[in-house]
Amino acid sequence: MASGILVIDKPAGWTSMDVCAKIRGILHEKRVGHGGTLDPMATGVLPVFVGQATKAVEFAENSRKEYIAGLRLGLVTDTQDTTGETLEARPVTVSRQELEAALDRFRGEIQQIPPMYSAVKVQGKKLYELARKGREVERKPRPVTIHALELLEQAGETDYRLRCVCSKGTYIRTLCHDIGQVLGCGGAMYELRRAMAAEFTLAEAVTIEDVQERGEALLRPVDSLFAQYPALTVRSAGVERRVCSGGGFTERGLADGTYRVYGREGAFLCLSRAAGGEVTAIKNFFGA
Image 1 (tube, one colour):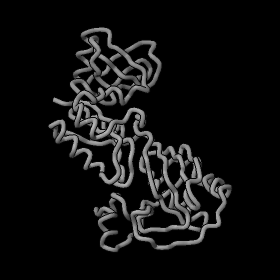
Image 2 (image 1 turned 90 degrees about the vertical axis):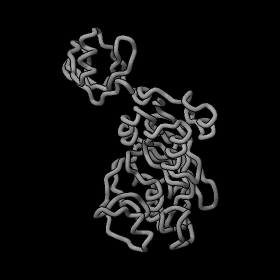
Image 3 (image 1 turned 180 degrees about the vertical axis):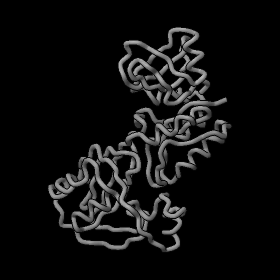
Image 4 (image 1 turned 30 degrees about the vertical axis):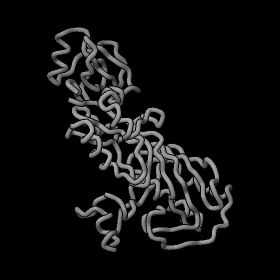
């Protein structure tokens, strides 16, 4: 049965769930999930988990992301991007230097108010369901982290491209909206491309057409998600049996940290944490 990770370059116009449904049909596997939603207008890196690899989805969802975003100044919409209805159109007298200066306010830990057109739930209702009924409710600000934010280029009279590396839960269209508010002219996102998610990049991504043509051959092993951590191979059959039963083991002299743990014949067993020579599983993947 198909099992592994596909790094998809999501096309515009597709929801993330559309991609998952298509992969289910191509690979004939019901267990398919993605590692971080992209709006239909967005393109770029969408890690898709197939079969037993779906156990790793949570690690992709919680990872940092990198985006290339188009910011259009002078425009305010109900969705905070150019797919929505225009609420305000204002003249723009902002210089590139003023925009550069405004970006300083959005680096590091910031507070974001989730947009009404989002899947965030308030009192059990998704915000976009309420927004489609013309309702707006109070949303509490949420902490997010902007690890990097830079102006790449001016793409038009009022259009700019930004690069942003951010934490889980960051809304880039809200970032564009908020930058516009700070500048006093309004702002909306006109394009979005995800360049990195779960440490996978666009250079590694494949298209839906690629998957239709090559199928399971494009699946990456689940341990590729954890390539940034060192590997640790168990030394004995007894330890391997213990790990496969969900138990920990002792490895004297091992530096504290996170490890990819493998069986004696190379099978990926688990992602583990070592502390004081004691190794315990964070998540088991034997059989994935």
